[in-house]
Each structure stands twice: as structure tokens, then as C-alpha cells.
Image (cartoon, rainbow, N blue to C red; front, side, top):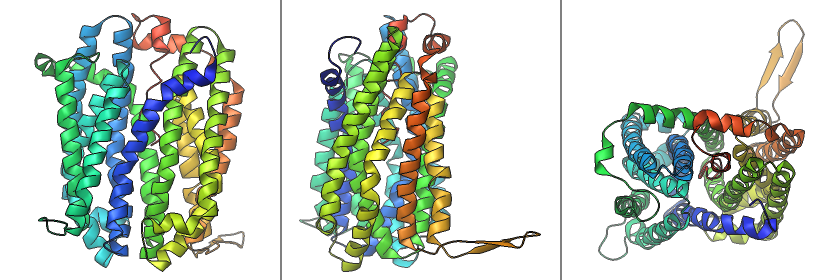
Length: 484
């Protein structure tokens, strides 16, 4: 990334991650497609559960971001043996954390569902779904550990192929388990969760076998599975900003899903379908952000900050153009897009409003995600985290409270009454759009300040002073899943 034409090199870095992310969204789209053949309540239930389950998975994001950083540094420094130990400690840490989160989720599953507003039949469908998803958490964490280990060693393609196989298994199993095709009984939302559980389990088993084999850059050695508190402390120290970032995004997603649930099953189902359509754009933008992080990091290490800025500008402009084209198609044919997933007229009508209000702004948010990748590549992970907080907890959630609901507050002593606009679900869609636009303005302004150009080598050296500057600057390139 330090010489030659920028666009083809960005494409070379990004396409395996783009394809892997798009395949990952097949899990969610397949579930939504087949659950839509059950009932609107089932669609609403899966829609509510997506942000809740993602809230728990956000912890895995932090661990795996740290794994990518440490493995890539040790491999770059020629210390493959320590890289292998990082892989083993990642396995231990992900197993311990995921088991604890699964136990907490199962113990408090009913209060959690009530907290986010699930009611009556939606509550029953959501409960059937989330119980199995919580059981699948250790499998999900282990697959993230496998993928991040290989990415740290420079292999982005092996995990992509496993995601392809896993997504294919999920797609095949869904109609049998959800609708009762063949000998299997119709299990509705529980069937969707079981299909995901089986697909993730097989992918995880294959991933662990590949790590044990050791021919793909790193090796999982059983003897390294004894706890190494120093390495685990480093994994936590490096990964906590990404974890906090993931929590902030997940809690915001849960909050917004809870807001939508107050308006009934139709808006909730439309929201779930719309978010899954939008997740395709997130998959592309997040992958390009990862490639941008690599380009920015390498060029800062090579002392060519102007080229680093050019990488970020090229990636941002290209990604925004692609997402704008996709969004334009959905704005032109919103009802057709919704009918792919559901036949309910009320859900389709709500989904049409969702897409017409929000889709025109998707390109702006795609730009934010690429800029966040550039900041992470520069080592400025706190700025990337701050952008996530701003876009969701300043520009989205409070705006939704003002636009969507009916309430008034009188300020004592001043005689001033402040009220909400009571736009209903449309107010929530407009809050999303406002957040995308406002965060894009802030992200561009922040990047143009140029503070990310300074201090990256010194910051990286604190984490691993044995690694060369060229190797250290690539460690922010693979923060996979942070913006999926």
C-alpha cells in the first residue's frame, strides 16, 4: 500500500473481507426470509433479538481486535511462537467470557425481553429464538477467535471460505427447521436459531481443526492452553476500546429496537427487515474500512502521511458511490424489496417509509465507517470510538425521543415548556437519518484536522517495542466486525 496505484491495491485488500462480511449477512437475511413465511410476530421477534444478541457479541469484537493486533505484530517481528501462544490464550479467553455471557443471558432472558418491549406473541417467539442463540454464543466467539487469528497472520481468504460453507448450511436448514419441510417439525423462530447453531458449530469445528493443523500462518498448540495471565491482560488492554465501542453501538441498537417495539408488530418487523437490508451496506463499508486501515497504517509507517490521506479519500469516495447506487435502487423500488421478506401489507407500507426516509443517507454513514477504519489504522482508536458514541448516543437516541414520542417538560422557574413532536415510527426513521448526516460532518471535520498523522509509531512501540515500525503500523488494519 505504500507504492503504486491506490484503487487496485485497496480492492485486493478489501474483496475477501467484503465477501466474508456479505456472506455473514446471509445468516440474518435467510432467517428473516423464512421466518417471514411464519407470521409478522415471528419477524418482529427475530428483529428484536438481533440487536440484543449483538450486544453480547460486541465483547467478542474487542477480544478479536486485540488478537489481530498482537498476532500481526508478533508475526511481523518473526516471533511466530509467541503468536501461537496469543492464539491459545484467545481461545481460553473467548471460551470463559462467552460461557459467562451465555449463562447471564439465559438467566435473565425474560426480564431482558420485557425491557426491550417484547409483548404477547412476539415475546413467546423471541424467547424461543434467543434461548438457542445464547447457547450458540461460545461457538460464535470461537469462530471470531479463529478468523482474527488468521487475519493477524495475513490470511483473509480461509475464513471467507468457511463463512461461505456455514452460510450455505444455514440457508439449507432454515426452511426445514422453520417451516417443517421433510421429516423435521415446524419450529418457527426456534428452528431459525437451531439452524444458526448448527451452521456456526460446524464452522467453528473446522476453524479449530485448521488452527491445530498450523499451515495457515499460526498454530493452536494444546500445550499453550495453560492460562498466561500476562498475555490475557494484554489482550484485554488492547481490546477494551473496541469492546466499549461495540457496547455503545449495541446498547444504542437495543434502545432503538425498544423504541420501535412501542409502536407495534408492523413497525418492528419493518425495522428488522430494513436493518438487514442496511447491513449489506455495513458489510461493504466495514470491509473497505479495514482495507483503509491497512493503507493508512502502512503509509504512516513509511512516513508518507499525504499518501495515507489519499488512501482514505479514495476509499471513502468509492464506498460512498457504491452505497449511494444501492440505496437509489431501494428508494426506487422499496415495496418490491420488502415483499422479498414479507407479504403483510402493513409491514410493507411501514418498510416503504423506512427505506424512503433512511436509504438516501446510507452513503453518508458508509463514509463514516471508512473514516473510522482510517483512524484505527493510524492508531487513533479512541477517536473511532468517540465517533460511534456521537453518531448513536448524541445524534440518534435523543433525537428519536424528541421526534417519535409524545411528552412535554416544563422547566421550573423559567416557565418554558419543551415538548416532543409525536411523529411515531417515522420519527425514529428520521432520527437515524439525522444521526448519519451529522456524524458524517463530524467525521470529515475530525479527519481533516490531521491529528491522526502524528505519534502512531510511538504509540505502537509502547505495545511491542520489538516490532519494526513497518510491521507495527499494520496492526489497526483488521478490526473485523466492528462496523458490521
